[in-house]
Image (cartoon, rainbow, N blue to C red; front, side, top):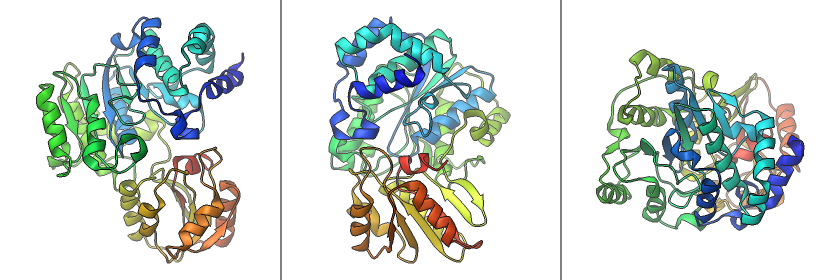
Length: 402
C-alpha cells in the first residue's frame, strides 16, 4: 500500500472517534496492552510527560516540547487530533513522522492489527511509542486522547503527570458531573509520579488530592504561581497554560533547563513545534482569527477576548460536531453578530440546518452553508476592512480553513 492507501485502511478498520463519535470509543486498555507486548514494550524505552485535562492540554504539550527542545533535548510529541495531515500527531523536534515510516509500520503489523481489531487511535498510539523508542528520544510529551484512566496513552509511567483543568466535554463517556470527569482524568496519576494540576477548581480539588494520597504523588497546583512569562501563542487562555508548563518543568527531574531556555521555549512554540489553530490570525483587513475552542470553558475565554477587541461588525463562521451540548454553548455567543452556519466535513459534523435552527432559539441570526469554505468565502465578501471574522466551534472547522 502507498501512504494514502495506508491511511484509508487505518481509518476504515474501526470507526475513528474524532470522525465518528461514540461508536468508536473503547473503554478498555486490553488492545493497547496487547499491542505494546507485540511491539516489545516501546513505552518503557523513553521518558515522558503525560498531559491530560479538558482544555489547554494541546497547547501545554507544545509548550513543554518547545522548552525542552530549546534546552537541547531530542523531544517526541504525540498529540491528537490532527488538523491537516495525519503525520502531525507524531513529531520529533517539530518534524513530523515521515509518511514512509507510517506505511512500513502498518505493513509490518497489519496481521496483528486485523486479528486484534485495534481502533484507529490504538494503532496510532502504538505507532508513536514505537517511533519514539526507535528514534531514541530523550523525552516524549504524550497528550491524552480522551479522558485519561482508560485512554490508550495510559500505559506509560511518566516522569510527571499534568492535568490542565476540568470542564464539561465528552460527558457521554466521562460522566455528567465535574468530579466524575475529574476521576477519569485523574487516572493518569501513577504511583510516586509527581502531578501538576493546572487550575485549582474547588469542585474537583478533593478528587486530585485523594488520588495523590493514594499514589503517594507530590501534587502541585500551577495556578497558585504568580510568575509571568510571555509566549508567542496569542490567546488569553495561554497564560494559564504557561503556568502549567512551568510547574511541569519544575517537577521534571534529571533534565537541565535554564531560565533563558525556558523563556525562549515559550516564545518559540509555533516555530519549534508548528502548532496551529490557537487564536491564529489568518488575515488582517478584515481581521480573521480562528481558534479550536469547542466547549463551554474554552469558548468562554475566547469569546471574552473577542469582546475586548475593536471592530465595526463581527462575523462568525460557526460549525460544530453532533455530540456538542448546544444548550450549554450557544447562549454564550453574542447576538450582535452575523453568523455563517456550516457543517465540518466529517460524519460526526452537525448539519448546518440543525445548527441554524438551534441557534435561532438563542437569537443568533445568519445563513447556512453546505461547507466551511463557502461560509468563509461569504464572510470575506460581506466584511469590510474594519470588521472581524471569527472561525471556530470545532477543531474540524478550523482544519478546513488553515
